[in-house]
Length: 245
Image (cartoon, rainbow, N blue to C red; front, side, top):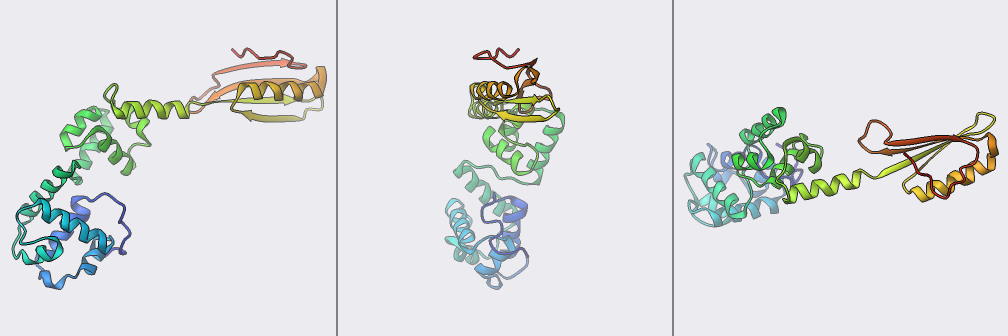
């Protein structure tokens, strides 16, 4: 058993949640032997979360003798296939996929070969592009939305592609690095996210050292292995704006 409530915020999946629920209620044990608290313990979720999901399942499915966990217990016989069908009905009504090991393996296989696209993969597992991306991130396959979109491809103009573009814009912020070497070999390194601030600091630092100052300025962007632009000089950086290139 898992610690109660440890998975309360996680996505419900077939193997981790629904199958153990069926096994506890109909898979050989008497339903009366499993209390709400025991079932929550088995699933590693809070009692309130299990009760809520039971109400949702029984409201969506027609194979139960009543609502919620009490209605499930009144349902004397229910095959695993019947219960899975009820879960499918609930997931479809909520617009969410039923994640299971088979669907996860399709995601892993697609990531390995870099195909099909997120939209095509979604059609294979019954999920939207965003739901596929969320699952890839949850499984530790993709590092984020931009990573998933770059690796498998997102629908142009769709929400995933737009979010990926916004994510790239956020991570592509340039950082300017100023290295100033004094006449005694003392080295000072500072980093700046604004070019105007960089120039003001460069002028101040090199003016204090005079003509013997040596300086190097580079523009660096996250994710790029080398500096995008750079310039080296001696003496005072006197230009009001350095044309780095």
